[in-house]
Amino acid sequence: MEQEPTGARRRLGAELRRLRVNAGLKLDDAARGLDCSASKISRLENGKGVPRPADVDVLLALYGGVAELEAEMLRRLVAQSRTRGWWEPFTEGLRTERYVLPAPGRYTAVETDATGVDAFDLSVLHGLLQTPDYARAVLAARLPGHDGWEIDQLVHLRRRRHEALTSNPPLRLRAVIDESVLARATGGPSVMADQLDRLLEISRLPNVILLVLPFSAGVQRAHAGRFSVLAIPDELGSDLVHTEGHAGEFFLDSSRDLETYRRVLADARADALEPEASRVLIAHHRERHRVAVAAAG
Image 1: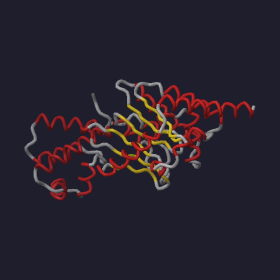
Image 2 (image 1 turned 120 degrees about the vertical axis):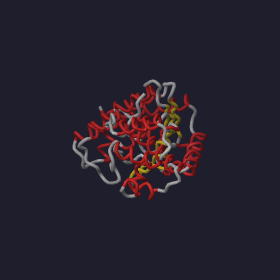
Image 3 (image 1 turned 90 degrees about the vertical axis):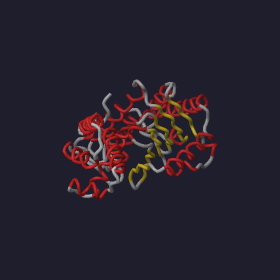
Image 4 (image 1 turned 180 degrees about the vertical axis):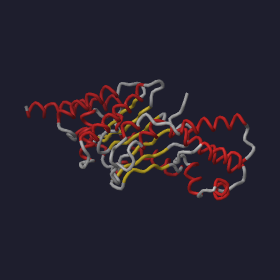
């Protein structure tokens, strides 16, 4: 099965790094061989650059000792890494916005390679859980300077991401949702009631576990901010932590960071309600929003 371009780039980068290290060469040595900067080699090895076939051939010759079968595998990765990701039609033409939308599609590219997502939702629901109307309300609030068609494109992108939950094999999703997310009337009571209906449906999927952290649990370390831990297959790289805030989005991959965020998430899970009790609380807030809709009507 062909990999998505970002996954292919990361695997290619890891292989190039392994070959360079095995050859006893430093980044500067590889840069001289390719007549480029060391930063370019670093970007290729980190899966952030789009490699040219000729560059990879030069590096393979420089590193030496590469069997033809392995070289062919690397050339296939080069070809795959230069293809367009499925998400790119949704992000073309979108204006970037520092901090809030610095690189449209970047998170989606990583999520596409993941086998599982463990999330803590503090202010809004994870994108994999959002209905179109809820997503539109969230995006419009975060991107007030963007046109309607740009918001629509991002909403369509989120809807397409949902397919991962019912694909074969499906993406595993485990989310701890702060009760404040359920109580907040994001988009208005009607939008929120429909959103919680959808949340109850998704919670029944065998690959999804949704736990609610109730108000009664008090303040947690997790309340410092929303985050996700993405499980990345070994052949594509290491697991990643994704965080968001007013200073933008960040990906962390050090073992120390991963351990810290996993521990924080484990603590939140320990104080969260069990799945069935969580569904009861979700249904309670859904009814509360429905009452608000009826009262307004």
